[in-house]
Every structure is written in C-alpha cells, then in structure tokens.
Length: 320
Image (tube, rainbow, N blue to C red; front, side):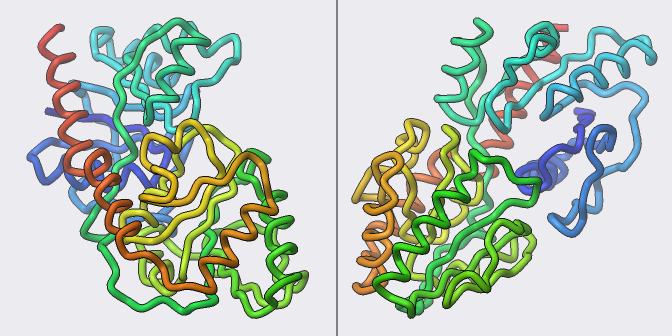
C-alpha cells in the first residue's frame, strides 16, 4: 500500500513508520501543520518526504490535519481516499471538530478515549494503543540507584493537565523527609527549576535514548491529571520500572495497583510522596516490573499496533 502520513507525534509515529516500511509499504511523510523534529526521533530512511500522486490511505493525528488532508484530496481529484484520524490526545470538543471527524475513520489510543469520543460526538472508534518498541524499551537488569527517581517530561509545550504543579508539591513533601532523593527530569520542560530543590537534575533526551537513564532509577513517576495513557509511561513500564501515577480511569487499562505499578488516589500528594519515599527506602519488586512489561507488550508492541493499522487500512481500501 501507499501510505501518506501527516507528521504529528514523532515519538509514537517513528516505530510505526519503520514497521510499515519493513512490511513493504511505500510510506510518505507530509509536514503540513507539524514539521518532523529529528532531535526528538529519527525518521526511517526509506520514508519519502514528499507528497505521493495517489495514496491508498491518509493517516493524520490532529484535527487541523483532517482539513489539510481533505484539501489534498480535493486538489488532486481523488475524493475517495480514506482518512484515518488517530486521537493521540482526547478528541477535541471544538465546534468545527465534529464535522471533520465525520469525514474520517476514528482511532483512539485507549478505551477511555473511545468512550470520550462516543459521549461527546456520538462516534465510535477502533482502539489501538500507542506503539512501544520492546527492543529499544528492553527489560533492564541494571541495579537502580536507591535514591534516584525519574520523571519523564514532554517534547511539546506543556499544559496544566500534565500535573507539574502537583509534582512540585510532591517533591517538596519528599524533601521534607529525605533530602538525598534525587529527582532526574527527562524532557524539555522548563516548569521545574532545579535550584528550587536540594537534589534535582534535568536532561533533554530523544525518547529512544531514555531507557538507560530510566533504568538507573528506583521508580518512574507521572503526575498527569489527564485521562489518557502517556507514551512515556508505557516506555517506563516496558523496561520494568515500578511506576507511580494518579489513579486515573484510563491507567487501569495497563496498571493493576500493587501488581504492575502503583496508583495514588487523585490528587493525594501526601500519599504520592509517601509512595516515592517507600520505594527509595526498599528494594523494587522485580515481579511488578515484569508484570508491567507484560501488560504493555500485550497491547502496545509496535509490531502488533502496526499490524492493527495495516488491517484497518486494507479494509478501507477494499471498500472503495
């Protein structure tokens, strides 16, 4: 198949593009609303950075790009090309979004996202989880440093739903009891000033470079208040980290509290801080890490997800 993919989220798209190329598909990248940032993720060499004459399927990841894709179909006189919209975030509730969604086939990256789309727009969707390359995010046998905690930041402008204010509260409460805990923040976020705390470091990394740094930590913490499943959380689980996050409905799809991670009542920063302190005082439970990796790869292995998209694409092409 000839696939036209609109650049949107390098961290999750990279492994899909690579897998589709390996399966023999011709993959084209459209950089319209978003330009692919090579500092965040490599682009597979066989991907064409140009527009094809007549793709079989168009894949987009933002509401704006549905409009761009519709214009592409109009000006190339190929109105029958199917558009697949993946909601990497929750579906927009803006007035213009609904009519655009109706012109495309919907994919949600978790069951909660599917429910949200049904409730707000009356549209159903396929559920395909964010892809994780289990080879890059491999299970880590490294003995972690007892007092090290890793926080995975964003590679895009922050929003309040990422929970940075909660993280500041949690860190302050941890440091009241143990100033030796080292929070290492991976990403490109300016919200945390290391000078405000006794033992904090920051490091900007490509997503696929994170596993060795995550492996050094006793646990990985995620303070998002957004009902979705962060791709960075899936990566941390895939390498076998004990993860700590707020008890969001969406996270129940991959985490069983106390068995494959730790879910803290929303938004109890005291309990969150206590869990971090406990994990930095005692050895991490390897069974929790193994169960976490198993849960992730059962739903998110990039080969599985690429195949799910491939099946959907073929079905849509055959309908034309």
